Image (cartoon, rainbow, N blue to C red; front, side, top):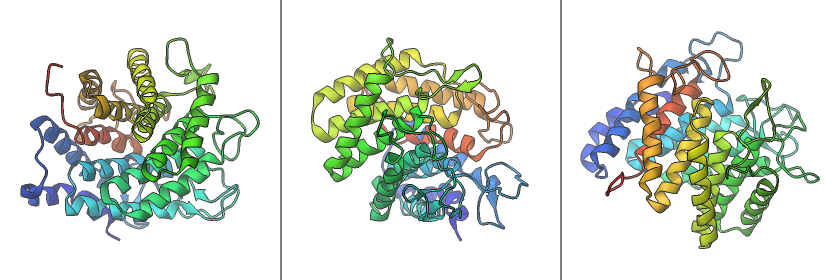
Length: 375
């Protein structure tokens, strides 16, 4: 198995292929290099015995491997580097990683097959997260954008089939996981973004209907007076459901942009602009944890890619500076939050998802050009 080698050799191969690379602005190339450097650190999580990444550094548990959600930020980093620079090595790294991610597929899962939290599980009753399948499907779609591999598109559709099966047909909203009746803003946001993106790619009207259904329910039930969706993440020490933390807010924003582009209806764009203005004004500081906050800032870049408003670029680069200034340890790994504290809500650093999430900010910035005019 060559996943670890493919991941770690991206930087060396990119240097070898430098004459073939797309020309980048110096600022964009700087972020690309930062992402490559961070990627070179992920071998510390590699488990040579089980031939996959561990959830924690030096994990000694009996089930040490990274969870489904734990792998998504690293998956997205590889996707973004390949989108930024589609070299042979970058594309190979995405293809290989996407193939290995299939170890999370559980064909026996109820209510429909989906991606299980731990690799190799085949129990039909294993509690499985609807939001995780949504984020996973988005990573597969980004892989499809980078490589054109149809299997990645099929995997994204399979992930959506499970994510949308969490829809509450009576009250609306999307459940958190198969073992609870609590609803989740993360599940709703991820499913909305994935539905909109799948419609944009496939033009299958079923996905458009799902996206419109999700957005209508969120607007009726979760919209706040400040223009955002309800972002109350913690309430008396417990997660308040179905609020929308930072990742879900970003997903809703990206969904609106995708629907605007896919349908040509400028009303979706106008709504995206309003939500973008409200969220960047209200949500900071971003301290919910890199695995959540990164999704939000990456989705702000989706809006920037559409309208090229320097405001959005400034917002993301400001947070990239927080990553550099506060999340990096003496070892060169990115193990902390953007304010320098330990991982939230887990209480201590060392998770693969934290490293992957932090460096994916740089990788995302490598996929866009900086503003050409005044910032």
